[in-house]
Image 1 (cartoon, rainbow, N blue to C red):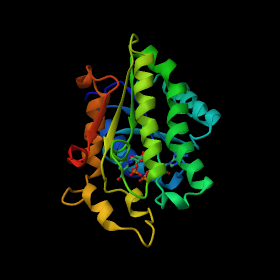
Image 2: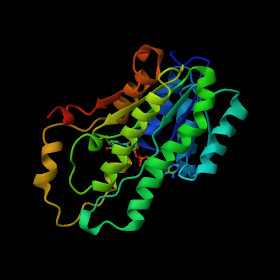
Image 3: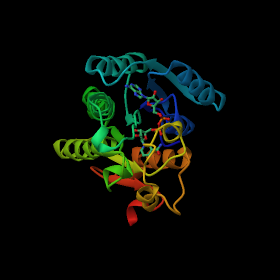
Image 4: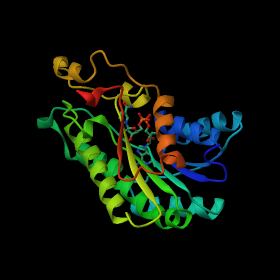
Length: 249
Ligand SMILES: NC(=O)c1ccc[n+]([C@@H]2O[C@H](COP(=O)([O-])OP(=O)(O)OC[C@H]3O[C@@H](n4cnc5c(N)ncnc54)[C@H](O)[C@@H]3O)[C@@H](O)[C@H]2O)c1
């Protein structure tokens, strides 16, 4: 029960990793406040968490909009009275040849993955300073190595890594921890959806999957829970790879 009496915001809670993190933190005592665009997914997460004896409330919203992100954090604090943990799981992935990337793809990916993470951190930090809480951002192996056909996504996750480290430095003398977990492939709806170009050269992709298996969302959620817990008191500004060895070489 590492999160007993704590309140955690989990973005992207309607699906995949965000759902698994919600279940994990709730199973360890947190009151989880889920945020997502997808209401039916949030309702399903709510059922799964409450059926397993946990606490879960949610709010719908597009966190890539600054005022919306601030409103979501305010709603959480107004209803629960505090905030101890922010887990930024919401994200989008598009695959394309770099020469075919559109402005729409670029803007969507950077708005959600980078601006959304920034706005949520910005809104949450004053409350986390009060509770001596912490933030876990979700980066990706594609921030730490070259991945073909996902130049924009990889750039956005590189920005998440830089944002995490910069914020960690800015608050290095304060009682708040800011870290990121960088997963490799996770078995979630996100990886079922990206349409790689029809003429994609799979030999370019094999080296970073090959014999290494995908992780289950629950495995990554366990790593996220560790980083968010007091067990990880020494972690600040860390980018924790949880990628079944992908970035090991
Ligand atoms: N699945 C993988 O292989 C993988 C690997 C490395 C990193 N990641 C990262 O893990 C995180 C979770 O991904 P996932 O695999 O669970 O994906 P997912 O598609 O299952 O879930 C992402 C969730 O984010 C929500 N979302 C998207 N845009 C939003 C917005 N503007 N406002 C609010 N919510 C929004 C979606 O509705 C969805 O519920 C993402 O940041 C992703 O980039 C995933």
